[in-house]
Image 1 (tube, rainbow, N blue to C red):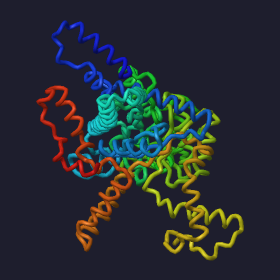
Image 2: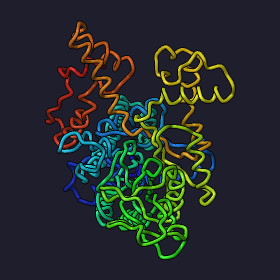
Image 3: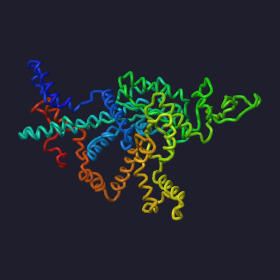
Image 4: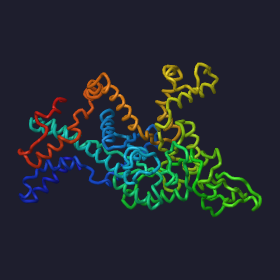
Amino acid sequence: MTFREELKTLTQLREAQRGKWDNIDPESAARMRVQNRFRTGLDIARYTAAIMREDMAAYDADTANYTQSLGCWHGFIGQQKLISIKKHFGNTKRRYLYLSGWMVAALRSEFGPLPDQSMHEKTSVASLIEELYTFLRQADTWELNHLFRAREEAKEAGDSAKVDDLTNQIDNHETHIVPIIADIDAGFGNAEATYLLAKKMIEAGACCIQLENQVSDEKQCGHQDGKVTVPHEDFIAKINAVRYAFLELGVDDGVIVARTDSLGAGLTQKIAVTNEPGDLGDQYNSFLDGDEISSASDIDNGDVVIKQNGKLVKVKRLASGLYQFKPGTGEDRVVLDCITSLQNGADLLWIETEKPHVGQIAGMVNRIREAVPNAKLVYNNSPSFNWTLNFRQQVFDAWEAEGKDVAAYERADLMNARYDDTELGQLADEWTRNFQRDAAREAGIFHHLITLPTYHTAALSTDNLAKGYFGDEGMLAYVAGVQRREIREGIATVRHQDMAGSNIGDDHKEFFHGDAALKAGGKDNTMNQFG
């Protein structure tokens, strides 16, 4: 409801109390309602699920409508991203947040920093979703509070035109609440465990859950070695578990992202169940590496034998008990994974790759689209890639294939700063700049995300400040490098008391205590130095 509608409703409600609520100002109560539009996480999940569905349809109509997000590990980081997006672009259209399991493990675990191996507390993921939305809701309250304060000033000045204008801005306010794509890793256990955690995440506000096809208790970061996948029937059970969680909680259009790590995974924990040649289990097992045998004498103690393409094969089993896939089958397994996931309840795909290469991704997506024409991807624009080196090498290879002279460049050393201002370096930067647009158009990527950008930005900015502050610059390192830039660039955090809710609290005190309110924002508040 708009502020005008809430004001009318609350005025009638106060009048119905026949004097008992005369201390309650309907305008203040309406203001508080408008500043707290979302009451529960499920309200948020339903609202943002509808946004994602609309965006997916818009992308299907025009691939220029791809979406983006940045990963974050704290509510304040997520809040500031959305405030910055609104400041620079005027709206939050097609911009989300990503919740990275990697960053939860590295930065949020009670065990301290951990690798991305699902060893962190599973509930910390849901807790971060709740925290992110708490900060995003506070950003709404903070922004609207400024509008309401300006409206009060206009009202006191008798400027009715300005009052109407500000009331319209309030009634048409765009929320900072956006979809969060939330990483549930490999489900933190069996399908029941996945279902229980998915419920927690949805109740916290998640409209989109990303699930990967690795073994839960052997899970590895997507860009590390040693990844172990599960048969499709196991993965489908977890997709079902997440869908049931969405349906139970009334988020009927919740979004499931099915991630496959098969491109870089050479191992599986178990042989799939198969009932007849060509079924899904048989297709999975067809990728297992092994040696054809002709008699029982070829079988040693502990060997496992399966029927593969009509022949008996002794599959390769490691000392760990894991089974090995045939080399070079990664892309075929990815295609099968993706088709199977989309045909069994998933909405979007995630293909974890070893490099950002439009042609490689498009090659797999085109095969997937032969079976599922509207297949769409979420893609990890990962900091684990050396983007500069990758794109310089891609340009080098393209030039070499065209017959262009590349003698001035050393392919293995293209990261060298001496190449920064060369024709190759500049073209590689242009390819990097266009990567998301090109991949959205040519490779079916609906959503581009950077998993852990603020892990790196926090380290970089801290290094710069420490170098100056503890060096010769002293306090000037902070003043010139941080505060003065905040002032010049209009960064709201320069008034950190206000950003943390001091003015909101002052206004509430005035609602509750009237003229007796003891407020923090008087003339002696040093925040006034910033205007």
